[in-house]
Image 1 (tube, rainbow, N blue to C red):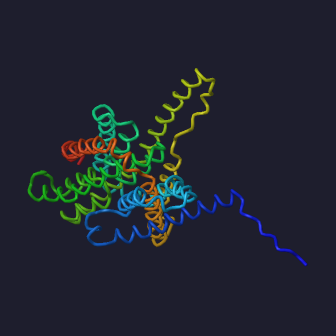
Image 2: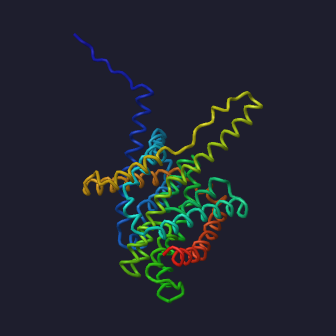
Image 3: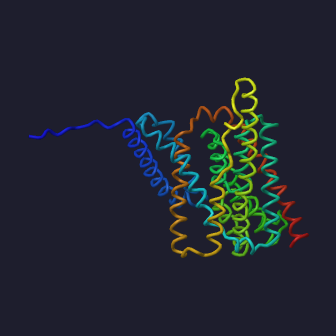
Length: 362
């Protein structure tokens, strides 16, 4: 007679099961968020699933987090960190070099000048005027300068910052990006912007935060303006790669300097500093090249983009779950004021850059 032997799960198996359950929980949460974002009233505001995800995640994380098993936290963290890097890399399938070439030098110059100036002004104003920490200032500036919530996610991964800092930056994107979507068409039709259709496309694409917000605003002008604005916006997205590489090198140098200083006192090795170069940015660039070469069928690209949006929604939802309102209260007003300073710059400085680009490079 044989005796059945039941063995208890090892700690490693329990940990893996808990992580998997956490990932599945975030996936189900993100699926619900995606459906909510499709509601006409929400979609009409230009709020992408990413933005809805971080808001819904933060509400859950602060009101109902105690109901989630502690073992699931590893899965939530995986979604907010490792899955995020993969999703940002696949975001490159939305950009092609051919589209960027369509707007030529004016579109590229508009994007470069807006991105560089906004990052510099935002980081300086955030740290020097508003007394924010480096990460919060950079995240807020990145969301305004490049591509809204997606840029915040990419920078969060590079800086390895706290979730509540990303939440504050996304809050700025939501507020001022949504305001732009309604304000810009009104200003254009009232004749206050003094721009033609091409200029409106350059200005809208160069200064509005989210891709969906750019499309929503420019569609109230003309199809031509929408086409130009979308391409300029995607050119800004393309600049995510060089900017992340520069920021990664900067963060790495600062980390090595700190480790070197600690080593002087404690005998630590300089080589222990962790390399902060965002390798997922190189993956982003690789997918841009793949998309430009038309290696993948259009149906496959569309499917991958849909899955990528869902993965980004999972990452943003997970960041929301890890966010604590008490942490946001400490720097929320100062981060929002930094976003307002950048918004004033995007309107005033953006108009000046657009006028200069059109007259000297158009």
